[in-house]
Amino acid sequence: HGCGVLGRNPDSEQPLGYGGGGVVKYFGLDYAENNIIYAGQLSKAFNSPGGFVGCARETDVKFGILNLAKNSNTLVFTGPICTAGLSSAKTTLDLNAAEGDLQRKRLLEATLGFCEGLKALGCPHTYHGFPIVNIYWTPVQVCAEVYRELMSARQGAFQRGVITTPMWYPI
Image (tube, rainbow, N blue to C red; front, side, top):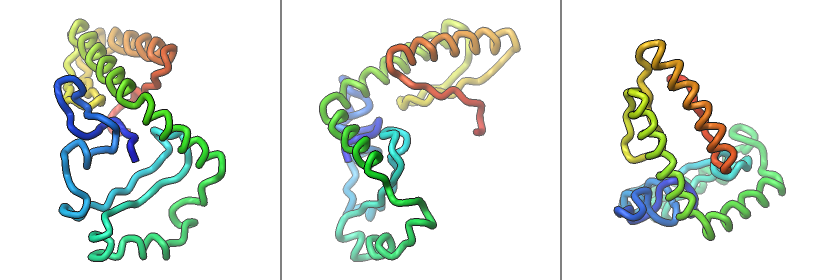
């Protein structure tokens, strides 16, 4: 599908990979050889209702995935996707083809900068190469300062077109 944070052939220039395509491409897996059934949804990256299930033809023959999808009642899982949702999904695919690698690079730079800011504040955190940062809250004074900085950074990111979702674990 070409969207998503992770893509194929990650390297030092683009650690998140190129072209989107998700975790399967990132790890260089083969859909048929590994019997991968890929399920996803459009609401986060696409801001569109809808979802998908895909697999290699060989996997479908073995497990009957497409038959299951064809015979599933969409009302159990979701309603049918509307025309506006399809249009926004197509626009997102087109935008990703044109700018996706640049956006992935910007996301990585912003994440690394955020981690440096946490380090400067003395806030313990973990970062494992994916743009999800775990923050370990410590003394109340540090928590309050980190929270203020986090909200300020969030506002700055929003003004540059980056949406963040700070949340308490486990939400």
